Image (cartoon, rainbow, N blue to C red; front, side, top):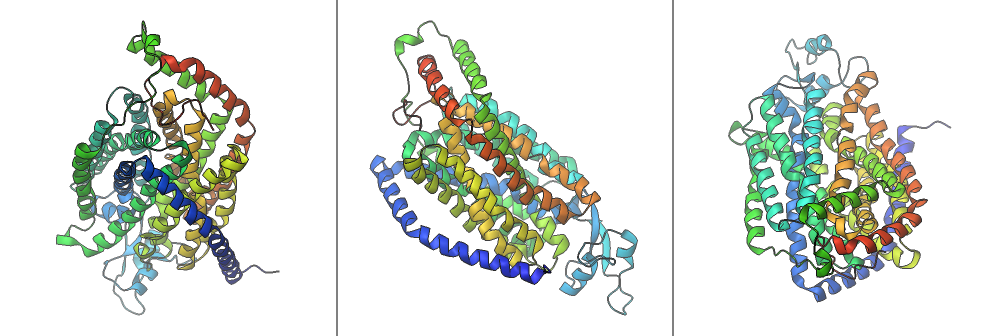
Length: 539
């Protein structure tokens, strides 16, 4: 039996139709349960929902400002002169046929042109006019360094001390400061004229963005009861996909508009402006919730702040060496790596292989719809299943979601547009369930007394590993091709993460029991972290 591209397309479409049928069967109970959840939220106070959407706004700006680089890399590299070079149209106003001539290799039309001489010799038909130029194309080591190490190293390192600050300072003030800082760096990026300007602004951007999720997650945990925490974190994680989709809309359409001849620079200027407005709004309307888990006041006598900090660090270290958390963090890191690789190489991939495709027309809504539905659906499913089948059900959601999503992720690389983008819809809906579910598992595995630094530590680990994985793209691309490199580092890492999530299940029971015992002992000494409900309930 011969496998052709047409047969693969038909197979993917059949899978997609079956997925839609399953989604429809799930929709009615999903809709009814979500309605019930919101009623409970409003009984607890409508202000909690307002806070959730403020934090969602901050997170979507966090992601927009982060990924604006990924979508604007080609015009930015052409202007500032950094990264690898490729065969590009001599003039951006050339027709689609000319773009195709430049990008396609003379030796293999399915691969981009890699030979400078062949590129510069290309002509339009029988004309003697030069239509192609060997110029910076927004890929290569310098680009991946901006996307990875320059941002990720400071982002991950800053998250740990910022997480500890949550128990000392008002989290509202901290998150507002971080929001204003990263918005200022986004604004300054639009004025960059040298590569080192980008390095500095990207570096400081990482410091600001590091404080968003630890503080926001801690606040959400105080405002929402445990039965709604998964769904609330799922809504918060909409910010990833709203911001990511906005980055494609901004990076493509604003650049094409070429306002005042500034092109890509307006992407960063416009993206920065809402951050200053939201920061002021949060400063005056976001209340710091009461810290309900204070412990016995008598137990605090004789315990200085340095001693409390020492106890918290000891407990954090003991918690992080549990086998279940070690494997869970590794699984999250691998899955996060697959997401990072695709996020920072989506636009370069389609620019190289399908230059006539307007990526913004698809990627400005597919991550938004698919990813947002995925994280909420993941939280909903895990919250519902846990009532009947226990805490382990959350981890099984992680396992199966990545196994099912991987073929659709591969379809985005195997198929041509628009089928490549259609394949991304189920890939996003199913594959992105992991975000809110994994964060919920971490929150429920660690003692409440170290929740904020534990979340910061989790983000540190998955970011330091996953965020630097794009550095593997250039060497793999040189050995094989960009498409093959993405096969390995996108759907390939989805499958690897599912195996590691599966291994997490086997060590959960013992670690959950140990977590409860340690918290009962240490809680009176560590009054810092609040709990919105009965602190003794773990799962």
